Amino acid sequence: MRGKDISFYKRIKQYILGSIIELVFDTKIASFRGGRNRVLRLLFTLLRRAPKSVPASHVPSLKGGSIALVLDPVTIRRLARGMYSHFLPDRNFWLLDISRPLPDLLAKLKEWNPDGLVTRWMPKVTDALIELGLPTALTGGYVRASNVVCVGMDHAAIGAAAAEYFLSLGLRTFAFYGKDAAYSKSRQESFIARLKVAGHSCHLYRESDQEWETYMEHLRRSDEPLEQWLRDLPKPVGIFATHDPMAWHVVQICRGIGLGVPEQVAVLGTNDDDVFCNLANPPLSSVSIPWDRIGGELALALERLMAHRKTKRKPAAPPAAIPIPPGPVVARQSSNLLAVDNPILLKALRFIQEHLSDSLTVKDLLRVVPMSRRRLEVEFRRCLGRTPKDEILRMRIENAKRLLAQTDLQMPLVAERSGFAYTERFSTVFKRKTGTTPTAYRREHRLRA
Image: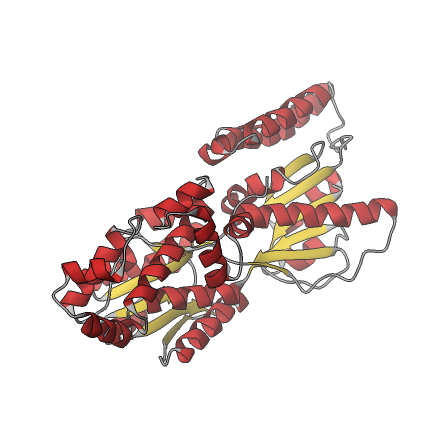
């Protein structure tokens, strides 16, 4: 029996440590300052505290308190860095794949009896997990319960950001490809609402209800109704898909039926998933999501819930949700389109894109386009609804947002690469246009150290 006990414990230990080692050597973790050392300390703590043998029916509770991460492999990789940097340093983690059969999942959790739980929303599974009564941090959905706090994306802000992006390209025909899910409907509604303000309508296509699928299963199938819808859309058109796998599907179908991407169909997804965005042909543009921040907020929220339970204090009423705004649009070739019908204006826009870091003025544009200033202003207003000066500033601010969210460049370099000679001037203009300072924007969209 002793040999069986040791074997059982080894399997549990190997699963936990193997998962942590994988995180240690993940390139994203390795690039994060201090992240590798933090995870290594956790690894050595587990090794040092491992008993020689344990009963096969029991998993020991370690001093720092244990947290069960009931997630799928994609979600745990997205959230890991933010979570581990915000949990208390002596926490211990059990990893469980949420796709396990539900009875097995519940049996493991009852056997382990963790102090807290982090999970994502999944039909039928979420309610069963919450009924365990554990302090629970939930992402990807909303459940109102005293032991649950919900953290997730601001779906309305995602839809609005997608609309703003397509409008900036000069497009006049728009479409939304979504599914029958609450988050998708929220993105759709805000996408349409922003387009309506600009005087545009939107074509819609919604996937029929399907059984719950794992993430990678979105890569299969032909779809004749969707093919016909894409053929019938007026061109050029900008299509916003509710997430990257669906955007990838649109790109694949367009290639199969001979529609040019982005020349006829500009495609935008959500999540900025490396797999889907970079394997798509052409590479896929996407609204980025600040996963580090979502992970951090989940950890902080769960720590608060666990502290209330430990002190036996009654927690405050649960908030409706903690919505996290999206990051900037990461533009790739699937939307590399400036949908203007004037070749001279198109030349001016490309010149702005190529010289954002220069001290560019409207006079510089007039040197490269054979057009009077008055005529240039009229064409910009007709096609984009903005003056040339406004468009230069808009592109500079969008470039600054990207640098703030995706790089660690110091503020003077961000200002310089966005065409501002002085950091103070950059900060003033950025706050006037966005309502927040560059530092606050970076803090909102990147991991809080």
